Each structure stands twice: as C-alpha cells, then as structure tokens.
Length: 149
Image (tube, rainbow, N blue to C red; front, side):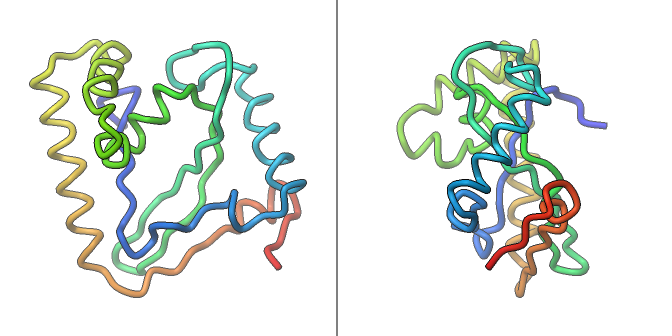
C-alpha cells in the first residue's frame, strides 16, 4: 500500500507519447473519460475537489516482462493531475504549485515530498533500463468493448 494518497507516476521514456486520448476515436475517449467522472461522483478521486475534471490513465509496470498495463482511467482535478505528471509540470514552471498540492493532500513536509520524489525517480530510472515495452490495454476491451483500430 502506498504511503501517500497522492503519488507521482513517472512513465518510462520509451512509453512517452502513448495516450488513449490520441489512440481512441473522440467518441470512444468521451465514453471512457465520462465513465471515470461518473464513477468518481464528479469529483477528484484523490483530493475530492469538485469542478473541472481531467481523465488520467493509470498504468502498472512489470519490468521483468517489459509490460505497461492500463489499470484504470481516473477522474482527477488539474492540481492532482499535475502532481501525477510531476516532471512535465516542473518543465512548465509549475513545480512549486505541485509540491504545495502534494504536501497539502498528503499532510506531509517538504522534506517528505523530496523523499517521495526521489523514490519515484529511482523507480523511473530502473524502468528506463528496460527495453521493448509492450502496452496492454485489455482493460478497455473488458470494460468498454473498445478495441484499437
């Protein structure tokens, strides 16, 4: 079990750019994201914020088998979504905002934020040593009967 409610998700570089939003038809993407919002009660699945939501693809990584597997699509507020994608957020100059949101949601200190980020980066570096990642999106077929073209 995770120590924190809100965590970082650092995608291996070889998997960058893979997005259901880009792979699905607009109608299928709407079906997936609207289902995520409904399942979350139209609030952020992590911090409970209401308002505009974003759909976040939750993946698991099996380094031994080089398998990136879609586990769920979550409804997140913009602030939680920025924390999930902390590296991209830092590149856009919003790293301090993301850090503050992480600390607020998790009730932790700045030192604990940096410790959690370091641990996430260690996992990221380990996954980047793996080559030939395969993407498993059977979750879409099982839940929505969606198959990519």
